[in-house]
Amino acid sequence: PVAGARRVSALRSATGAASVRAMRLPPLPRLEVVALLPLLALAIGCSLLPSRELPKLVVWSDLDHPPFVAVGPDGEPAGRDVEMMEALAAELGCELEWRVAPFAEILPAVAAGEARVACATLGITQERKRSVAFTVPYYVTHIAVVVRDGAGEPRRLADLAGLRVAAGAGTTAERAVR
Image (tube, rainbow, N blue to C red; front, side, top):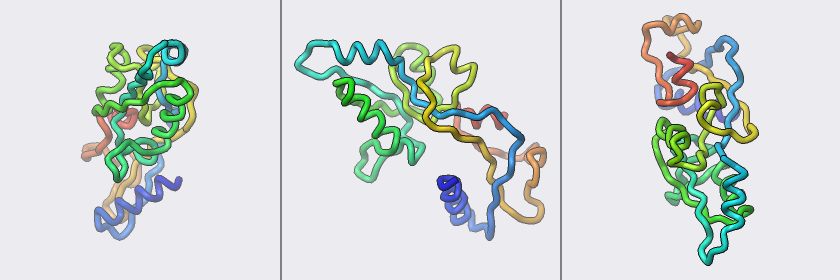
């Protein structure tokens, strides 16, 4: 709710609209945001390798979903999930390295074996479960539509038919829009 309130305020100031309201969507399956971790092999691999250099835990992310993952003012990865990955790497005895990629490329990279870990606001879906392994969910979110409030503006989901609606490429929000 707090993040949503900030988003509405940002939209209000960005659009110059006098007021903005959130439109209720019909019930959708709850989307559980997770970090992808093929855990056991990774944990064993990071902790058992005898080496003078720490093994690397390379994490793919778009770093574009504050407060979870973002680029901080210093240009370094920042956010709640970044701190989680730092703690995981420390626990495993690994050096943490971030690889930034567009969101739509992250899950295909994990499925193809190019990436071992993805850390982004990822909704668990049956389709995604068929190609990648998920950890236990640690955050639950919902998809919402935000529209201008006023005469002639959409009031129901059906009112959006034929209008331009935006969503992030490769996200569960994009799937809901389609």
